[in-house]
Image (tube, rainbow, N blue to C red):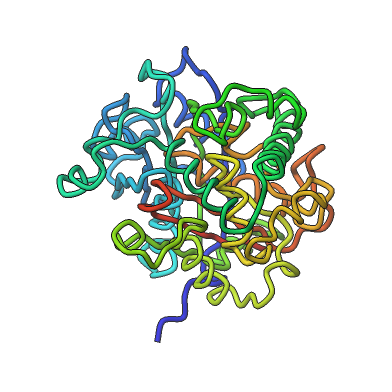
Length: 398
């Protein structure tokens, strides 16, 4: 019977670049920057790394299709390197590969690194996904946009739970304003300016009800994690951060092709969270979790994720938002580093960036964003659109 990887893998080093418009740096420069911080944090020599995983989504931009650029940029000769991609959950997919290698006994020390140079595409948002869903789905989804897909989720959610457009828009605005406040405290964040909910409401509409400030931007950046066995970790430091669970769920097409899904939640998040809690031994996430980093590609995504993660009751997340439950001083702070909304979203790096923030919170390294006495932190990394998605949920603690 499978037992999972709870406490079988420890993180001993992490690094993250500043996210943003890194025009003067190539992807290789960003990889080196994140890796050097992680290596120094781990306190090991580079030669001790026995395997590495590279996460990058758009292989046509700077990197190429193999993982050789990672081995070349970091000068890691002859070890196994693997490139992975899983839409916006790519960073956590790379981390999962490294963790599973250590948990299985295949290696003692492994590296996961995610990187993306989206600003170099010359495109304002994500590059086109028209061929990324496979030939069959081109007949089902001839054209769509991410803002359009999540806007439909917002209107469906409002309708199902009897929420007026004004009440719904204000809740979304509070989510965005919260992230901007945290981003302003984070020197590595892409966007570092506080805004008010009223400014969010007045911003241009992208896909109603989502305005400009309801949507995360795209960024350049990289993040890295070095993982090892518990024995090695305890020999290196007094307080290693342990992986308590790591689960990924991908759509089967059911949401898109049947009427069983009503469009007000993410089926993949619900399933990945259920399995992650079971693996970590969590029975009451609202009481047991201390900090959340969720995939806030849009403000509505963050709202429904509160419910999918069993933190808020179905249809009641707005009450918690209005009560400040997820604010930096709230019961379970969410996006303490600014989230995708303000830290930024270089796709391949985002999942590891989320772990980086939880890791720093657990080690009391978050500076003015520090949460008092965190015990367990959760990351939620999502790729795709509501009806066609892949989701990862990770839980971490001391």
